[in-house]
Image 1 (cartoon, rainbow, N blue to C red):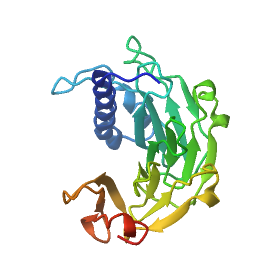
Image 2 (image 1 turned 120 degrees about the vertical axis):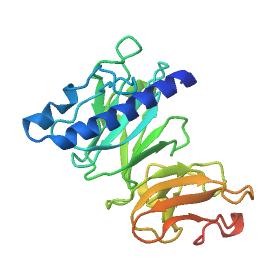
Image 3 (image 1 turned 180 degrees about the vertical axis):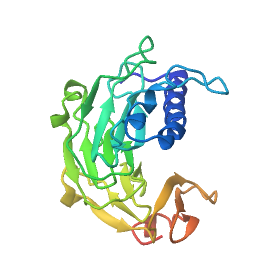
Length: 255
């Protein structure tokens, strides 16, 4: 796939963030018909600081687009957006219409097989084929079928590791074997198998520690020892903390 220019990456992430924050206040103030039409009130108009609202897609029935991921899935040089809808229980991949139409509604999209209530999502290559896959809620993995079948949602093979909610799915090579693993709920990770990658039984779960309601899960070297630790912001049990990477010999034990 083509590389996306940094300037475009900044543009689309800025558009998304401003759209979400700008609509939040208006949405909260109304109900009924007012809420259904709230997204139209400030479209294309600069706010107090000059930032203009650009709506990708409205949410008049409150399906709750809680998480979004951006990547150039179709390889055209423009960043696309993959969104999970919490209350709606589904996910959509919106294709960027290009610079000339980017400020209008994005009407070209595919909708994946329903996965149920989903507060967060993540992306990464989970079968080592070079294509970016999608993870809804931690337990549902949709494998990218490649450029030829990208726009056919039926071709995105779904693998379910578990069905309960596990916020902040993060794709990262936890054990340093060159394969991307899947961290879920800031308390466990699934090791990518060497073969049979599309079959849930081959993904072995390893426990990290205790977390109930994580808001963030960030893989980074916290203590400067050259190993990847996991920084967590958690609401109900431990607050802000990090798991210290124990090293390769103990990597599959609790951290």
